[in-house]
Length: 212
Image 1 (cartoon, rainbow, N blue to C red):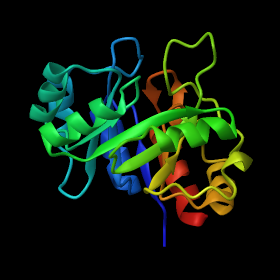
Image 2 (image 1 turned 90 degrees about the vertical axis):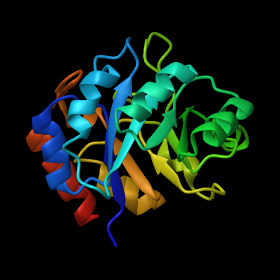
Image 3 (image 1 turned 180 degrees about the vertical axis):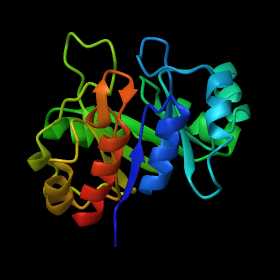
Image 4 (image 1 turned 60 degrees about the vertical axis):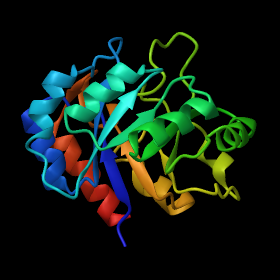
């Protein structure tokens, strides 16, 4: 059975269409002004309108306030991925107020980070383990960096979890074979430049996932 995958940071009709045709289960849209993949809710609405039913539309949010959350939901988002410093109470409050699935993304560099990510996830529907951002990075994710996947061996989070950080067509098969996550998430690994997705790289990633 093929692992679900998410293509994150989509920003053009062509790459949204490519991700759909490639079989992505989730499409990610970034609402964070410091990111080269940033969209306004208005721009995202035009892209989301073309997404068929059954494909998840995920908002990547970093310490977003309720006004932004409401705006992205109005644009057609159906899942909220929190990638900032949100507390357990904030995660639970967002989930209760919106009634939408909430994912928590956490940066990982050590086994202690994994334990902390699980303990602090709160009432999430899915946990996304990403590489911890380098000290000089301005983004919490999407930096094209992988963490040591061996750290996950023998770890079983109590909720469905996904792997992100540094994945591409060349290494996703090995990651899936070693860890068997519920889903994988790719962004910079299918880009020609930061924020510039490649149709051919999206297709190659999808083929690698299917072949794993």
